[in-house]
Structures are given as C-alpha cells and as structure tokens.
Amino acid sequence: MNYFNYVDNKLWCEEVPVAEVAKAVGTPLYLYSHRTLKRHFEVFDSAFENIPHIVCFSAKANSNAAILKIFINEGSGMDIVSGGELYRVLEAGADPGKIVYSGVGKREEEIRYALESDILMFNIESPQELEVINACAGKMDRTARISLRVNPDVNPMTHPHISTGMKENKFGIDIEKSLDEYRHAAKLDHIDIVGVDCHIGSQITELSPFIEALDRLKELIFSLRNEGIGIRYLDLGGGLGITYDNETPPHPQDYAKAIMDRVRDIDCTFIFEPGRVIVGNAGILVSRVLYTKAGADKRFVIVDAGMNDLIRPSLYNSYHNIQPVELKEREDILSDVVGPICESGDYLARGRVIPELERGELVAVMSAGAYGFPMSSNYNSRPRVPEVLVRDGKFYVIRSGETRADLTRGESIPDFLQ
Image (cartoon, rainbow, N blue to C red; front, side, top):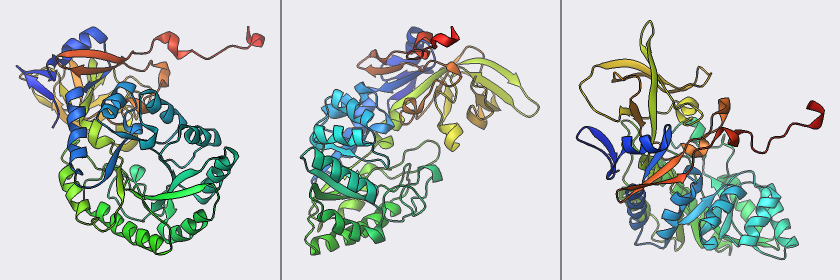
C-alpha cells in the first residue's frame, strides 16, 4: 500500500497535491511519501518479530540522507556496498554495530574506514578479499568480523542484470568451495568468523528461490558448527520484489512465515537487507510533457525527464506505470514516452497504451522510489533533479536540484589551454 491517490481527479501524495509541489519546485522531481516509507519498514520489520533479527536497509536502493534517517529512527541497520555509502549512513546517524558491508570490489582505504568505524561485519566476496581484509586488520591491530557471501547457484527468476546468486554471476563464493574457504578463514589471525551471507538477486516475485537458498545455507551452517566454527548471524540478503505492473510478489508476512518455518533449529540472529520492497512504491518521478508528435504508427510523448533521471527502463526494459497527474475524459492512444536525451534508448515507456497527454501537463512515473535518483547522472550536461519528501500535509526539499554551475564544479582548464 502507498499514499499516492487521486482526490477529485488530482493526484495527491498524502495530503499534498502533486501539482502544488511541481509548481513550487519545478520538474522533473522525485517525490516521496514519508507515511509510505515508515509503514513499509514497520510491516517488514514486524513480520520477523518472533525471531532475533536485524533489518539492514539496502542503502543503494535510495541513499538520500533524509530517507536513511527515517529508517534509522525506526531502528534499522544498514547494508552498504562502498565507502561512500558508509559515510552517508554514518552521517545520517546509523549504529555501526548494525552495518554490514557487501560488494565485490572493496578498496583497502574503504576497508580501513570500515574497520575504524567498527561495523558489524564484512560480507566477503572472494578469497583474495579475505586476505586483504586480514592484512588491513593486522596493520591496524584490529580483528575484522566477517561472513562469507555464499553463492548457492539458485535461479532467482528475475532479470539477468539483477540476478546475483548463480554460478555465472560475479558475486560471492561458490557454495561447493565455501567450507574450505571458511576453514582457511578460521586460521587467519585477524579474522573473526561470525556469519554466513547470501543474496540471490533483486525484484524476486516467488518464494521458492529464497527457500531453496535457505535450505542450502542451513546445511553449510551445520557443517561449520560440526567443525567448531561458530555462526552467530545468517544474512539472507534482500531481493523481495514489488508490483510495477502485473507482478504478484509475496507479502512480507508470507515471506517471513516461509523463512521462519525453516529456521527454528538454526539459533542465529537473522539479517535482512530489504531495499526495493521498502522504498520502491514510496516514490514517484514527476515530469512535464514538453511536446507530443505523431509518428507513422504511434505517437511520441516527449517529457522533461530522461534516462539520466531514471535509467531503469533503458537499462532493464523495466516497466513503470505512467499516469497523468490530472484525470479527465480522454482517449487511450498507443505511445512511446521519451525524454530529451540524444539516445534512441532514452525512453520511460515503449509501445504503451496510455491516456492521450497534452503539452504542458504533468505526468507521474510510478514506483520510482528505488534505484531512481541513486542511478541518475549528468549525461547530456543535465543537472540532477530535486528530491522532495511529504509528511503531514507539508513538503520538504531533501535534496536541492543541481544548478548549471554544479555541472562544472571540480573541473579546471589547464594554463596551456588559456
């Protein structure tokens, strides 16, 4: 459930008309509902209330400081994949003891930063990474808490670009080799093995891949304990999908029940890393129609938001519902909704039957709260757009839109070119 609804044929975010925000801030803009964000987190967290657990929000899904702070205030930990994300979540007030650090390419500087910050654990992605973390910890006279990210070779039945738990993916350590890697880690002087980690993909809409992965992880945990390697945390990652179009992903309570039915005998603290399922449907991208034109077979609706603002349709051919901010009687027409970027791949929808839109009116690109702004860029020298949060009938600009001067900040022209 989210709090974007039509009132008297006008789209509102909670108690604020979307058009009012667009008039004040300009378009394009990202617009988030505080009530939806808070509710989605509470629903997910409470689903696991009967087992020891930590919800570590996946910061990559939406890393705005205000969004992070909402979840931190609810008791959330953080799942990070870079030193920059570690900086962000710490600045927002995250508890280092609830931070897990994933990602295949941790640099030594980032590893030292995480050790200095005393995060909960590193999710190790490769044998060489393990050696580097052990060496860094030794030089700092510290011990690094770690889990191995185990690749269970489970098909998550999602888009290939967001599948992460199969043998051909770059992530994690093959489950068949993981026991030997744990044995090696146990011999290292500056490593404290505390957990097992697994993340099989994103936008998963079936329970069976999660259960298949969990059953394989249980076998590994029991094998490790039989060898005297204590496992205190089982990190099951994230990946639970949302409804963009006609998907019917499981409710978090169904997801929780399926997991809890299988983990009573594990005796671990469970870590979950939800991202999209919390923020995806809590945000929209608001854009304005610049022009319409008729092609030979369909119409083109040209809006002021492009692939630099929301790249998911171009990158994954992802579906986002596009709807007018004001409802009225109009014909449905086959259209492409495209942006101003000089790329044929710059589109928000292709071959979509949508209401006939008019120059100057506002449209809402729905389900844009996850992997929207964080994946945006300055391509075609376009300033990145503002982000706005609505709460209790008021709206707050939580990131100002960039200016043209921001586009060249940090650049310089050498004297020999003057």
